[in-house]
Image (cartoon, rainbow, N blue to C red; front, side, top):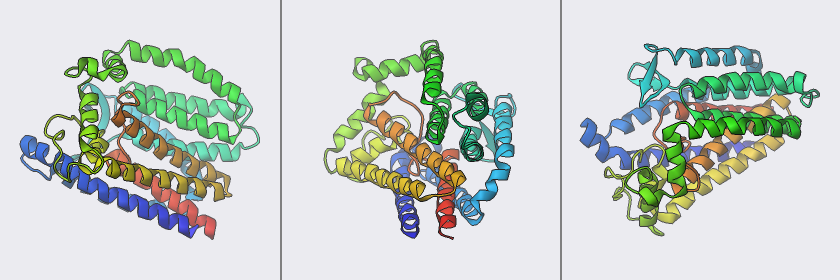
Length: 362
């Protein structure tokens, strides 16, 4: 699998380099105006990159199969952190959400840790219950209880998008492992009314849906972010206005260096630049799928499958939101958006992928 490892490393390195350039380009003027330092976000992003690089190397250096004995402690630790972050004075609140721990000058989001812990726990459980996954009470209910508990705590933050994404990944991997499609479909149908109420009864979520349906109807209100994103993409044309010459980043497009960084890429580098970034993700996912297919160990198979699904879902949602194909949801573009917990744990996930590939060659 050496060719797969080289390809994954090269693609991720390229995406990270694009991210460094575009974060400075999209945030420099805003950071200078608001914080007095044009490189404020770039410096913090580089710190997260260093942390992520060190932890990715650590994830590569061990035998990933040793993680099986830590699967339950990790998911328990994750649930404990999800509880603690909800306590005032321990968890940090921002914009009405309580999702972060303050660690010195940096923030840590426990839900990102839970994603990796959930994948390790799920891979361990499914590899042990391979012949009983189709049995609801013995092979599926325990997973359902764990993901349900974690999702409820994440919903309390509140963070509907992360809760739904974790549930989707777990259900998909479980289906591949042999869980009954009828059971998964029934659970999905039972969850739909809950998700509907969580959207309809929460004003800002309902506003996002209304903005998604027709952002131009209220382009100065609830549709402002989506319309500005579309203006950015449309302004770039085929080859873009030039690196650093975006107009939408000048206090027009909110979250230009985080959730909507692809829109700035499209404006400055044009359709060609945005397409090149998307193609890199497609190749990364394809190479990841090749790795999954070649993995004989059940634990490594389910773990690598979960990681690829996680990165794929984040990419599809971010791109879909940027072009107006999906409602607004704060999922960053992997390896490119301004860093934080998501960047660090995505790099750890890649380290685990490389680890799985290396061990399979031994």
